[in-house]
Length: 284
Image (cartoon, rainbow, N blue to C red):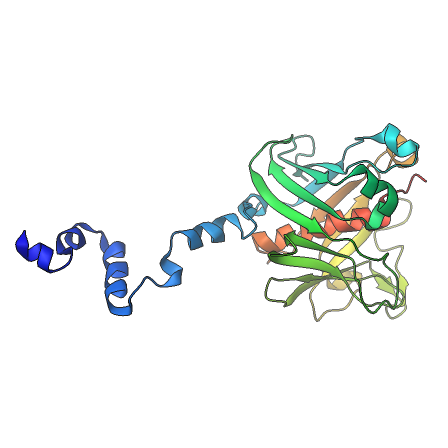
């Protein structure tokens, strides 16, 4: 026992498992544990830096349905909080995730579709489930071509500690967004399909008279034609009543085959941003 005390806890070392012994040895040699061995780091990798569980997005492609929450409120000119039910494309009636915007009524009334908001995506078909992802959308000037700054943007996580973002680019004719990783590297681009050398939106890309309005996902170095897409965010027909009297929309999102769970979370944030910029207030 005296020998064990002289060796500074050798008894405990002998009782450690193999991984703990390796960590202990590194501590003795380097004066502390390497950062990658702290328990919090694997948890962050699993849960996501914003506290969410991005692995919930690692499954199939998604069907995102905006509810008619506050439709009477919208008829008198004040935008309601956006609320979404998220299911798979294979089982559209069984929502397994829920999203609700958090913002003030005054903000929605004055700033309309370029307002600031935060949004949490949670597990289950109603509020109160475990957090999947959180988004922070700052107040920005209305989007427009040839704008040199103040781009529309939504952050995964928070603006202070972002886990990537989807941001408007400087464009001339066709709007385009970059999907950006936390290290600033562009991993995808989001834009409508184009024709005439990228000068016009290709309204026939999904066929005629089927009421499908796509934003395609492209690789950073690729073009913006139908043949070059690797995924898509597509608005589909929501029904006569919803289209005429509300801005409750329905979307399909097909992720790129190589998209990681956190990349999928950023693309889902891009869907929320596209919905706000292009389709809120459509009933007006």
